[in-house]
Image (cartoon, rainbow, N blue to C red; front, top):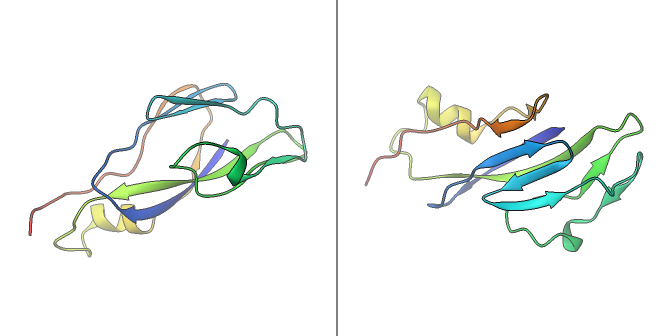
Length: 109
């Protein structure tokens, strides 16, 4: 599974967990097993505020989707932590369990 991250200024948190074709986003399980090879599931057909794209499955069976990556206020957006959140690399999920996300240093203004 390939997860693209779309940074967004928000104060809430995000947790991801993968178990086969089931992706759990903040406790909401999305069963993606019904998407056939070469098929997709439209964004508007999924009741999930964190999803930022359609979900596709390529001919080899690999899923690709985009999820909003929330981040708080960043006093210094040039720090390494901030860059990892503002310009996140895609995550290639290769095993089941919690999915690590880039973190940031949040500071009050």
